[in-house]
Length: 145
Image (cartoon, rainbow, N blue to C red):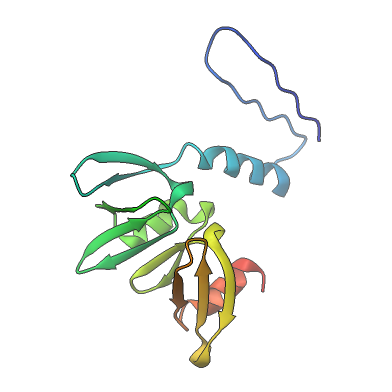
């Protein structure tokens, strides 16, 4: 693959992807480029609304019908339910791992098998999430295990 970077003094940034066919490698590059542009609207404890890049999400949870988004820097709220988070950004790594949890697969550092078909996931933040036995087979399939 040939990569060319061209600096211009005017106009907006532009990325052109030339390929003979849109294969797995090119789709991966497109996904990576798009991931930087994808944002979730969240708000902090001061009720300030912020656009949060999806790539910063470590995991999300629902507690008493409220959805919380956790990053390495802190915790936020969003109006989106877990199902919509997974639907919109599943191709960027958000994966439903339990009734009340969505995890960013790119933030998982280690997996450990547990009794009853569950999986313990160690996240980049040092926190542990338990993947329910219902979602464990889907996780194994998604990770090619």
